Length: 245
Image (cartoon, rainbow, N blue to C red; front, side, top):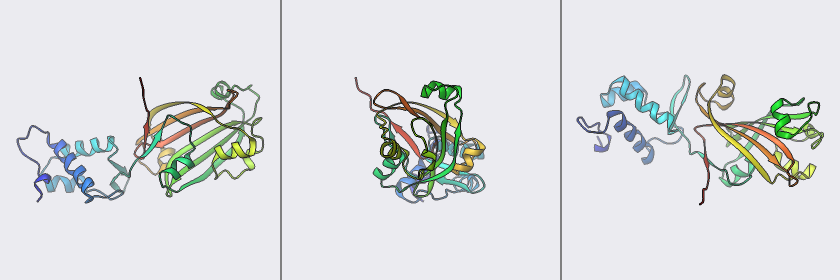
C-alpha cells in the first residue's frame, strides 16, 4: 500500500482530514477520474479501519468543497472541473461555453406572456399593466445540465420574441433582431439549496448547493432591458472577480 494512503495513528492531523487528503490524492493522480464513482462509506471504513462518523465527516467536507458530488440512489462521484465565470464583463452563456471548449445547448422549458410582479416593475421600470415575456430555459454544457435560467423582457422592447428560435443565444437575438445592445449589468449572487424542481432539472440531489444569480442588464440609454434569474449547479460553477486598489 502507498505510504501516502495510510491513516497514521497518533498523528496531530485528524483522521477525517487524512482521509480527505487520500481521496484528493487519488483524484490528482488520475486513479479517480472526473465523473467516476468513489468508494462507498462502508468500503472506506473497511479499507482504512475508520469509524462511520470519521468517514462521513470526510465525505461531507469534500461535498461542501465541491470536490465530489452525490446523486441520490446512485452514489458519490468525482466532480467535473468547474466552469469559471468572470464577473467583470457581460458575456452570454453560449460565449462562455465556447471559450472553454464546451458545446453549449439550450432546452426551452416554457415561454409565457405575463403581467409584471412588483420585483419586475422595479427592475425593468414598468407599469403594472405592461406585458412581460418570460422565457424559462435549461442550459447545458456537453449535454450536462448546468443552469436553469429565466429571462424577463419588456414586451414593448421585444414584441414577438416568443416566435424566435429560443434555443439560440438570447443576447444575439436581442442584438440582431431588435437592435438591443446590452452594455451594462448589475448582478446579485447568493447561495441556496436545490429545491425538488431544481434538483430534477439539474440532476443533483435535493438540498445540494446551488448559486443564484439575479441580473438586470441595461441598454446604452441606461434603460433596463432584461431581468435574468439563473440557478447554477454549485459543483460546476465558480465565479471570478478581479479586485484592484
